Length: 102
Image (cartoon, rainbow, N blue to C red; front, side, top):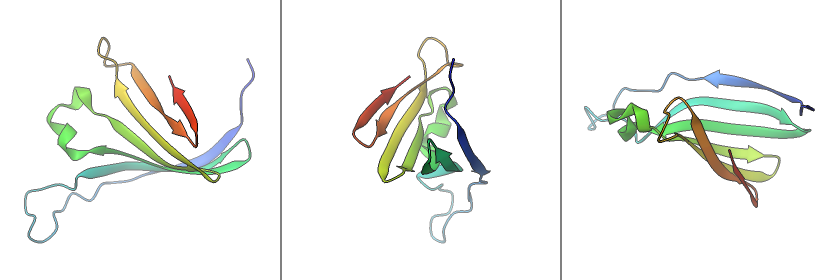
């Protein structure tokens, strides 16, 4: 089985949970979990990994959003637990004009 070289870093973030003045008691609509940067097949990538704070009410159904760029192409993915087994994650999205699922 041949592999494709990937290199990069993951910056795990600690989401800012302090409300803005006047918004006491509310969270931002999106919480960023990590930022991934590096190279894939010689192309730079930069990705933000986040989820909607409203999903905290039901953690077994959280959808994780991955948005960024690979080279000059836009990247947009979502990953969710499978209905039959929440330990297995399904993803779907696009890299430029290409649709990707798994």
